[in-house]
Image 1 (cartoon, rainbow over the protein chains, first blue to last red):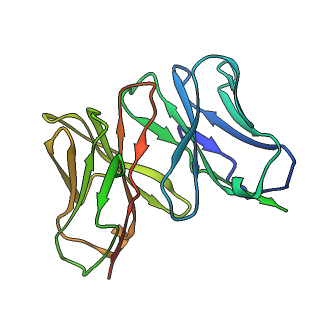
Image 2 (image 1 turned 180 degrees about the vertical axis):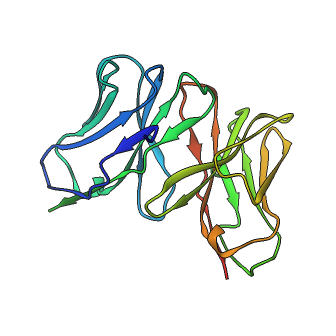
Length: 112
Length: 112
């Protein structure tokens, strides 16, 4: 079982819709969780971090964490074509501090 | 100037050649990382360093070596390049657990 798993997609949503991206992780002691956005050929950019159970909102983005289910998600409201990118989930495992484990990413396309 | 600078941006080299990829940062972070990214495989950790005297192997260190010349500089070397080392390479820095990474712009390496 991979440390961090994401649906590879691609996920396609119309402009204005809510995009939902999901991530599960294997280490129950994981402490910190991050979402990165990566445009094609570019470097990953940190867009959200979450550390405790519940929701965290930042503009159109909401990160949700459920440690009991070992599940973290990213919701993008009012999706725009400029949101089209690959979204990477990253986890700081409790057993190996100091480095992040990345999922393989979910490719999102928002069509006008 | 970028916070994390990678050079070169693109490089084509021949099988068997030694090549060095360089990374420098102005963020003052102690932690630095080298990842490679391949289509469908996501980001894989090659080496990481918590300070000048602390170097650690990641999951795919075979065929690579690193040098931490200063807090701000972390270089990755391919001793004898082979075609399956063709990939997009990213350097990243971190201020510690829970802060996420800042990535450089990447080096696209092709080994022919």
